[in-house]
Length: 535
Ligand SMILES: *Cc1c(COP(=O)(O)O)cnc(C)c1O
Image (tube, rainbow, N blue to C red; front, top):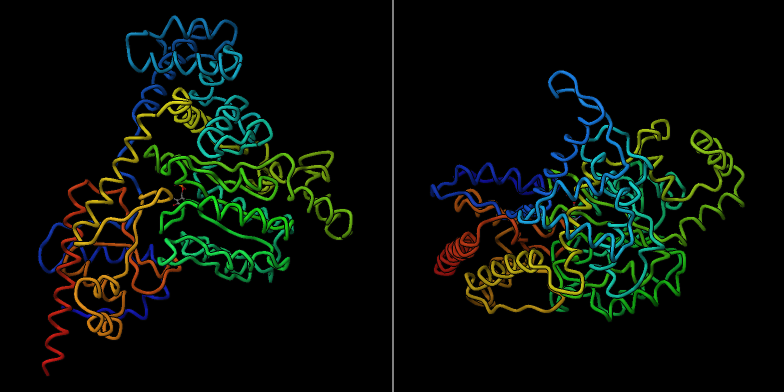
């Protein structure tokens, strides 16, 4: 068996290392079936919203043919809003479960949200057909209301912010991050050399992007440890009170450690913002719905916080590219822009010139509207915004959940049960006691190979392993000999030796197999250790 040069791998992103290891896993020396538990992509999907989308397309084609019908129905016209809700209701067959869902969804938007039904159905029909540029470009009007409601019901734990929050639907959480990093730079809120804090361990891009030449931010890590159940301890929050700390980036619940901020941590963060009132917070809550009674940082310190959410994980929609940015109407970002504009003539002139292309009141353009305009480099503002079929898809995913408001959503419950079941299966297969807490999203789990060595064998073996086995070498052997690919935790800011297992992307039975193969590899290191002692 070849050796691999692990020092070279330490320079690469852990995502690229895992992709490389997967190639080794496919041709592993034992001829075992390759299992990749490195990626976070779920292996389940929501069907209801997808079926519903199709029904809206079918109805939309029928409607379109009412205005133009040429070439045997192959060429149709615009749809007509007048009376469209009534026609849609006629079209739907309440005995068909998908249509019954659509009827329920419409009733919810009418009775609970007081949305005009003709406007809504017209937006859906026109949206799924996709024959108009997104208008308004930031978000379709009713899509925004529905997304706001979804966020409030699922992430705010009783705080009412939906009517004071603006939403910008984006091409996944990925684009949300790219647009926000860009806008914080373009708006001079974060400048090269500024100090930013990162809640580590974290999804690797949050560590890598700020270091790039175009950002050159000074990062420091605010990290949690396994001994504290991956919660930040109190003195870590003190570091954030320093006004030189300009921003704090958080994934909550965390990735890779899968923990939601405890209520105590949320209180501490509130104190931080009182002490450092201009602190910029980005919270990426893509796993929020995997924790019971979750509460987002945005609902605690809304004026300072940019919220990122994605439908990728819960609804099995990574290929759709659907996520969003949400922010409060009254926020420090607009305040900081206003102050800079008043105080700095150079910035004032630069803002005036840049935004004069898209508005006659450039100095009044809000941070969120700037984000939309700058997402298309100003010049293409008129063609900005997320594709309308994607926007309607998000609204439909949201409604599958909202119709259960105040009750248990069986889809969300089933999704949580899937990962929870695998979580238990995995830890049991390592021969360890299954521990969990209410903050644990159980979407991923991390464990240390060195700690495992100690708990399964001895302190002395652990010391041997720490000295003689680089964690990447362990991960490489796991792939090349046992066909199992994991994600390296150190690349995300854990101590060396932590591996991240995604509980989302493989069938249940694979998790026992993975634990078994990890144990086998560890046993083989133990044999080497015994041999080395015998010499
Ligand atoms: C998966 C993930 C994303 C990416 O979301 P997309 O909507 O698929 O682009 C963003 N942030 C975190 C923390 C993630 O784990």
